[in-house]
Image (tube, rainbow, N blue to C red; front, side, top):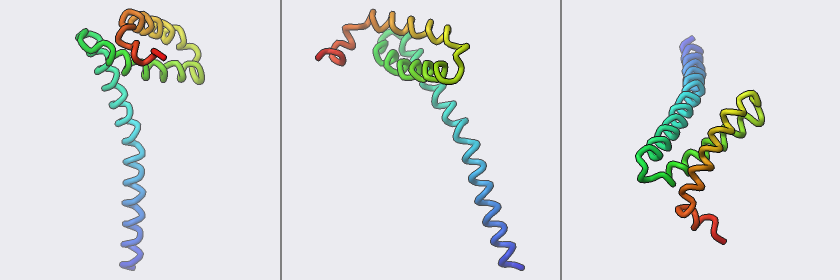
Length: 103
């Protein structure tokens, strides 16, 4: 009886731990994604590290495009507006990115 109870307890706690970690990961990922958005936006607003902010936000905008192209095309117009704003700022700071795109 005692051995069975211990085995049940081990299985129960293992399942509970996996359930908790499985439910916690999306929340942590969402918080990290929001932090990247805030940091990228703050870098743009400060004005000193605009190229770094644009680089951070470019990865996020790529994810937005991938989501709306593949899963939810009804949200495509706001993604297009954000992309146009990003491209405008990239063009304005093109000398900062010259080393990346120069052959």
